[in-house]
Image (cartoon, rainbow, N blue to C red; front, side, top):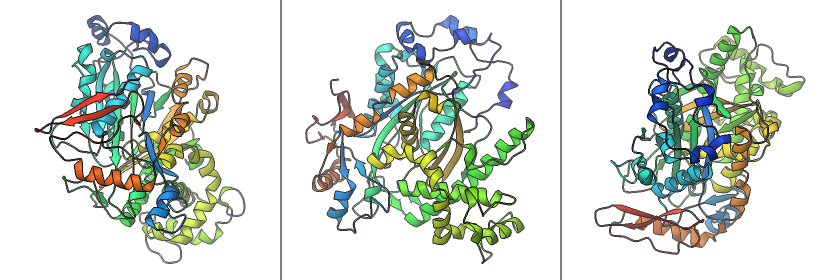
Length: 530
C-alpha cells in the first residue's frame, strides 16, 4: 500500500494534474498563495480535463520542532555513575532534548504544523491531505490527525484526507509514501499534502534512557518539488520480530531488546539496499547504463538514527555490501585498500549468493553483525565517506536525540541547513528508514537543479537556516532536574482531571501546550504568544 503507483496509474483514463501555470503554487510563490482564495470548484474540475501528470512530486517545504530544554550527555554520564564517554563516545550523543509536563504528542504536532503553514504563508484551504506518523499513543481510538483539525476550523476546510499511521519509527515514512501516492493518483484534487512525524522518546531509568529525545517534523508534499522522490527504486523489508515494542498501554516506556534491535536494523539495511540497487540498476540498463550502483552514487546518505554511532557503523555496512557485490574489488588501492584480509569473505559470498557468508567460517553474513573485526575494518574504510555523505546530517540527532518517526527527517533538515543551494543542486540523497517490529525502506530523493536565488530550493534551505541558532537557544537543565521531570511525567501522563504543573515560560514562543485534562480524559490546548 506504500508504493508509488507510477506505471499503473499512467494507464488510468482519468488523469489528475494541472498544467505548469495552474499547479498549486510552489514555495517561491507561497506569498501569493496566501493572498489567493482557496482552490475553486473550477480549478478542481479542470483536473479531469488535464492531459499531464504531476511532475517531480516530493517535498516542497519542511519544518522542525524540538523541545526548548535539554540535558548534557556528559553530565548525564556523571549522574548515572557510568564510565566517562559511554554516552558521548560509545553512542555518539552530545545532548538530549526532552519535553516538560506541558507537552504531549498532540501539542508537538500542533506546533510544527502551525509553524509550517505560517512560515510558508500557506492558506489552510490549500491543504487536501494531512497524515500523521507517530508511535506515541495517548488515545486508542482518537487520532492525532483529528486534534490537528482544530487548526483548520477558522478556514472552514474539513475536506482533508489522511489519518494516523503507526509502526514504531516507520510511521512517518509510510505517511510520506501515502501522501506522494495521493498526489500521483486519480484521487488528487490539486491541493497540497502535509506529512507530520512526531514522537516523545522516553525510557525507564537505565542504559536506554540516554537514547531518548523528542520532536516533530512537518513536510509539505506536492509537484514541482525541490526534493523529488525518485520513482520505482524503493527497497522495502518487513518481518515479524519483537526487538522493540510497547505492550503496556498504561506506560510511556517500551520493551527493548537492544542487541536484537541492532541486528534487525542491520539486516533490514542489507535487504533494503540490495533491493534498491537491483531496481535502480534495472532502470539504468533500460537507458544504456551498465554499471553497478554503489554508495558512491549517493552524494548524501541519511539514516534513521537511534544513536549516532549506529549510523556510522551503517555506512560501513553499506560499504561491506558494495565490497561483496564487486566482481574484483581492488584491495591494494582506492576505496577498498587494506581490505585484502576479507577476500575470503568475498569468495564465499560469490559461491553462495543466497546466504551471505562470513569470512573463514562459512556461516551467514548475519554473524558479521557482531563481528568486531569486520565492523572495525569497514568502519575505518568508510570513514571518509561517512564524513562527507552522512556526518553533517547528524546535527539534530547528536544534540536532540532520537525523535523516533521524525528522526530521519530531522537528519534531512540538518543536512539541508548546512549546505547552499549550489552545493546541493542535482545531488541524490539516499534515505534509510527503520521501524522496529519491523518495517524498513531505503529510498532516494533528487535535489532540483535550479539553485537560483528565490528558487524553491533556495527558499527551502533558507527556511532551515536558523536550525543551529534554535538549538543554541534552548535551556540547559541539570541531570537532577531532568530525572525529576521524567519522574513527574511517569506519574502524571495518564491522569484525568489534571492540570500540568510547572512554568510554561521556558517553552519557545508560538508553542502549543497541554492546558488541562478533564474528568473524561478530554485534552485542552493553548498556544504561547509569538
